[in-house]
Amino acid sequence: MALAVALGGDCLADVGLLRAEPTVFGPVASDPTVSRLVDQLASGGQRVLAALRTARAEVREHVWRLAGDAAPDAGGQVIVDIDGVLVLAHSEKQDAAAMWKKTFRHHPLMGFVDHGPSGAGEPVVGLLRPGNAGSHTAADHIEATKLALAQLPKRFWRGRQTLIRNSGGGTHEFVSWLAKRGRWLSYSVGMTITDAIHQAVLAVPASAWTPAVEPDGEIRDGAWVAELAGDCLNDWPKGLRLIVRKERPHPGAQLRFTDADGMRLTCFATNTTGTPIASWNCATASGPGPRTASVPPAPPACATSPSTRPRRTRPGWRSSRSPSICSPGCRCSP
Image (spheres, helix red, strand yellow):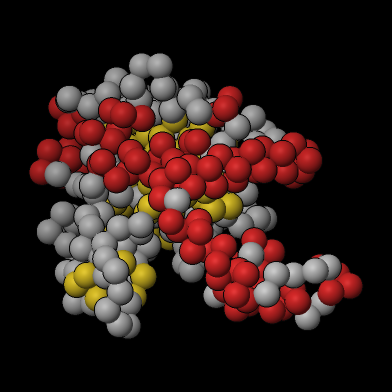
């Protein structure tokens, strides 16, 4: 069954593809045998599910070891992207529900290990949720992250070498869990622009905005980034950095109440330090995102700071669908 899925199968009957090539795959179980196995596994409940997860983690660690320099942990860091996925349901199915987009669907949380710009994401977790599950439910994000970490080699279960990215996980509970003493995970999560953040953005002087550039080094027309500080960081974990991006919206795009001066605003939080933000190479399941232009390091720009330039921000998540933002861990629409 695993081979059938790897070859693109999406139902049990697709094991017939393997059965058609006995010289390559050898003896293959019949459809009734496969069906009985699935029934037996399903009857085992959480015990069987835990065993399957353990087996997947052991096999993954072995494969990464064999992959050597091609493994996602070859550089000493692992990046895990966690995000919600909307799965349309065309008929009544278990946990399918109506949601605010006026559709009937499921809303699972998926997690993928990043393989860099030349690779694809490696799935490590799929947390099934009903279609009306929230996009910012901290308990679900924490559960999905726990399951994802359990799929990594043990040395990546804690520490700054593991980066958790989420386009919409900027809640106090989730960020505090990631940064908890003894866990010390790196994170980059999308933030909701609150009134406090909005007021801080309005107070940033024009000279404090840094032009965003594309991964190829070209300046992205009409996009700027800045780092905020001050009261808008109160009550958040120590070390949190708040990066905001403003960009001219595409023709016909509708602005939101949280946008300002005709610019689309997006915001993300990260605790990464020490590396010039412009040199970061983040990727999401989606294409290249702009990054900050190289400028001399300086104190972060904020409503109360006289600094004229922020520190450089790290490159944003990549998207295969469209250019995304210049901010690390944020996957917002242009």
